[in-house]
Amino acid sequence: MQKFGFVVATILGSLGLGLAAHVPAAHAMSLIPSQEGEIKLTNTNINCVASTCIDTTSFGYTVTSLAYDGSPEAPNYGLSRLFVDNSATANDWGSGIIFKTKDAGTNPNTNEFWFRPVAYLTTPTGSFNPGQLPAVNPVENGQLEIGRFKFEFDKTISELTLEFFDIEDAYKSGVLEINGQAVANLLNAGPDGNRQTLVLKDVQSLVLQLGNPGPDSRFRNTGDGVALSQVVATPEPGTVLSVGALAVAGLFGLRQRKKVSQVG
Image (tube, rainbow, N blue to C red; front, side):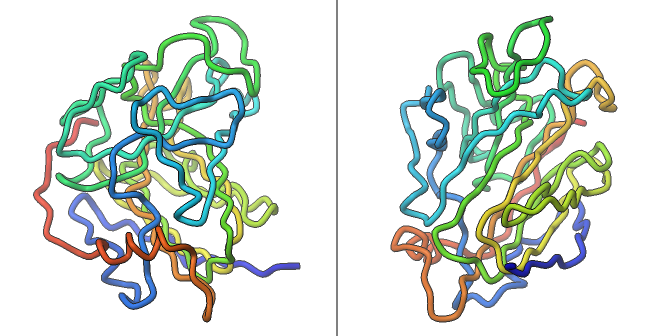
């Protein structure tokens, strides 16, 4: 059986430093593409709606959107899409998805690339149907950042550091599964704009949950949107992830960022 482990999650606050400062620069690499667009999912019933469709296989991993399995907190939510967004720019990706430079709730620092889920409803008031392609417009024009995703890596990641942005509902966002084993490592609530990290060991796959759609959310009319602001990988000794990931490593580094206003 493969081993895995956690390092205790840390709340960094709205002015939290980049995680690259805590990982050896020679080996750490960001797995978030430095390009805005929609992540190409492995789901056969979800094609990219954005003109820029990012294939992550060159980065050494694939992403699958998962249903919330009809849980009470998400009775009408279907499969979410996943985007890479730069908080400094506005984008109209079509099909009702509009990203502003200042969104309804979740706003990372300026010029930061981050994974941004987009929540969909299956029907406005109907019952939940797990795995069904969403049939209506994205919630809040794509500004409700909620989703559940499975990441599968080509190579074992010796150390994987995840940074979650703006968790304000307790124990609804975090890691649900590692290497096919349920772990339910969910993070506590923090103040507006908080950053929390999880460091995982020996990862081949994981399931992430970002956000809480309600109705038990503190934001009952919408939900608690959460972004994945950093994904930093250190491969096993003697291995590399891919040429694409190594190219990103050359662009990855800590820089000062201007704080933007956040709306709770």
